[in-house]
Length: 239
Ligand code: PGA
Image (cartoon, rainbow, N blue to C red; front, side):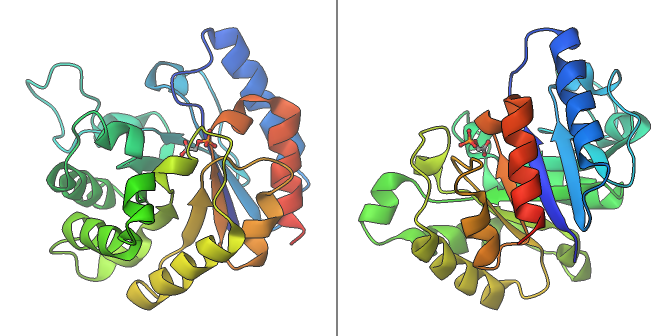
């Protein structure tokens, strides 16, 4: 299975020129790296201006809406994403959950994405308080059960990203032994799904997560630094 490195640019950068620079640097840099797929997830506005995708570099969106068209102010449909060359979509990122996205909405987005043959990257993770209280697995289980409710086979097509909320954007990555514990648990729960790690990944710690068995990484802040991001990709690839 190819390792997958997702670049989640979030609400960055501020200009299209910077976005193009970042995309082109990644595209050039990954050309000769084997066994890896890089997915750039820019803000919606830039998607149509980046590309074209290749076998090594794909485009993804950071969110989507489940209906195909109609009176849904501010939303972007999966059909639109498909028409603009997106192969992936992030669903249920903790920053969206924090803004009120529910597991029921996530479930609808996942179903709609699979229907349109766009691969969803489902983010799950516990808060610091939940980890401290020993509730990590209870939380992950509850998210997975609700988010994947009613799925049969196609659920294998979902990439699952373990992203402890307390590790996202904090510079405090999850200790590999804790991440491994979660990975083992996840593999029992979803044996066939590609499972990746996200949360303060950088070029120094990227390999740790691949070495313990994650099939890829979800990179936020570090994906906005062209060289740092390429270093992450290269190091993950040689593991
Ligand atoms: P980070 O973000 O790498 O900046 O912690 C990860 C994420 O977006 O999920």
